[in-house]
Length: 194
Image 1 (cartoon, rainbow, N blue to C red):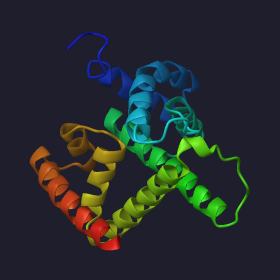
Image 2: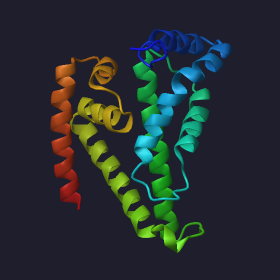
Image 3: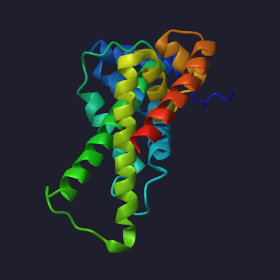
Image 4: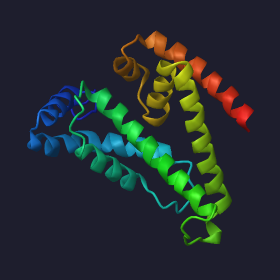
């Protein structure tokens, strides 16, 4: 692995996260270059199925997450993977809030400008799918919180099996098994909702 790779920066990232949590405001400025590229990658992966011209770009999503993280003082960062797990949760909430606002606007909420060439039907279908997935994840969390957390970390966060195991504090084998079971359960749940 090269010296500039995300894996080699992990110990430094963890050190900066802990310093930031301890109130070192300079640590946040030093931390940003360590995590920005990975946050952009996560956001781009989440947004890749959106229609062309979608109003939220990966940079916007990262900046919104960053603004929420800057105001988070009560989190005790354990390690780099923990930071990205929290970031993934924030991205998911931001996207769900936007999807729900779109649904409210469609049902008579605030009016919004519509470009008919942008495929409004596709955007509305995507918003409904995201909300259905969130509802299914909430149901899964009541049945098996660990499996729901693993889905969130892997799907929304893009964490590797090893990183997910580190966050959840289980073995990689357990993550793989839970991931497989949770995906099958969610597929059944979403097909039943359709």
